Length: 382
Ligand code: TXA
Ligand code: MG
Image 1 (cartoon, rainbow, N blue to C red):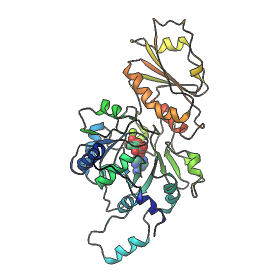
Image 2: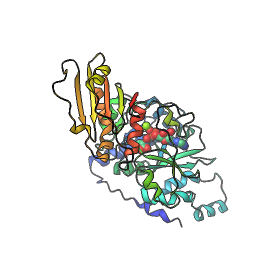
Image 3: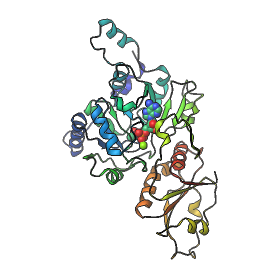
Image 4: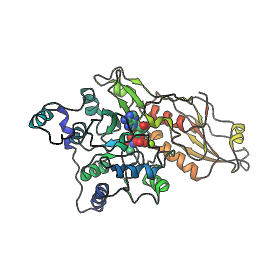
């Protein structure tokens, strides 16, 4: 008997008479019957979900987000039972013998045992072989021979998936190319008129997406940094030699392994100017040079710029400065970064100057810098 069955008992108790329970139930019904995707909170970012077994429903996601069709989606599950069903779909007209093997062999590759036990439910996506007679609609995998799966830890997400009783394909619920949504308002801003339902679970706890890992390759690779760090993964048996399989640099990566990593990403309308950690506060000449027609600049301060304020005697009537402080704590910076970019965009600044952080300082720091490097048109101190 597989040992990690404890996860099949993730216990979700909804007060059945509450308004929340009614909303989750009706969202779950929509997932089962409609081709319009449903937005829901996860601990990382909001997701835009559809029944992963119905092609029409999955196409609804690509349509609402305007997402390129060659970028595969992550499948969300609420139990290992659901995951096993995808790895070992029931044989059509299968013999008793086939039924026997399903009870003895765990179809989940053994390399994943340790990381599932340690990080699920949570911000880790694992790549798995997609079987020939897959239950998944082909639109989910965009033609790849693998699919990504994760079990989110947000109670509303788990309840929704459990009630829908389907594996749920879900990318981040932003319009393609925009910063990922970490609050229900962000989803509404991007997708208003394109979707009918957003479950509001408040602001997301982690604030950056899940870590995508390929444990089928040797050594295991991180394809996208996220809520679980390289160091955390390396503590798991079989994962000691995990390597970084993504590129952060602005140079064109010839063949990105996670297809989504090649697109323009996480970008507000304003030009993002990223100052790598340790770069001095921009001078007023820098600021003037970037201020365009609106004459307005946004500044996102993190670890050190917050205590190095500009002199007030600057040319404030020529350049307006909108300041956002995320504080010095890496966890808070991850939680607030996408929202800060969105807030500054709504203030119609021409450029956003962001103080980068040391990517080794804290578990989510590599993910934060990865997103900022992708969002940035100009990088200073790299
Ligand atoms: O935290 C998250 O992962 C969020 C929440 C909603 O769960 N979802 C999310 O999905 O970030 P999305 O679609 O925005 O990003 C999925 C990433 C993309 O970079 C995609 O290329 C990669 O995962 N991916 C998915 N399936 C893959 C596969 N079979 N092989 C390689 N990369 C894959
Ligand atoms: Mg995304």
